[in-house]
Image (cartoon, rainbow, N blue to C red):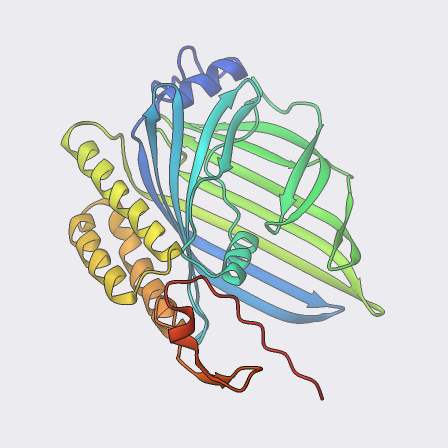
Length: 347
């Protein structure tokens, strides 16, 4: 069986370097929309303390702004199935590089449409993954290697991993997991925790370009008082729509991506809800019927949260007495200036 798009040349047993190079070369202009779930389970002792399930969506497009330089626009959307929970939406622009050991996806230069607290939660609950950052072994599994991982968006730990490949019909799955018998420790919330399971997998279908399925799993244990605390997280994403970025469709997606990047900047700049709503309406009309349509609901819900938070609105005016007894209007005294308010008191 040959992977005409995913492999530059040869069969499924192509060298790791050839596999990596072929996959990257297939992506110029490629775009995809994924949908799936994130599940979280936390238990203390024998009691399940918290269970959370989220609808997860990932929409992405690969571009080449300058020859030889690849970028990926990624929109992550996470919405709890529990009532009363606010959805989280993040916009990332990541650089994409390749090498003999796999791809490297490095967020940077992008913006987020979320508050800092929400952004941290999004990174913790919805790990950013799209392409394997490890070489495809020619067959079976490769020896364990020590790799630095970032868990829950912020915890860096060095762990021994094993990579493997599984072939089934016209599909190839690349898997990387914690080496058998390894239980590395790390600090989480000022407590020593033990990693019990970590894995990621990428399913690649012949002629389909970007992966058709992404999965990750994380399990670790710590302690609270005299009880064992166990945390489990799973992510499953299936590709719903994709495009090879050719012809009129490719040109339209490139235009829509430009508008979406602009929207991310508007959120980050705290523009007025009215201005952002107008741009969202224009974007949604253009995105309808394309794979970027999956972003429309996320933008609606993110705008609702943005409005409710008061972001983008004028700060409330107030008048206080200065140290010399004069009445000072906040708005008049600070007009056209960047202001830091520090409220303090004694008593």
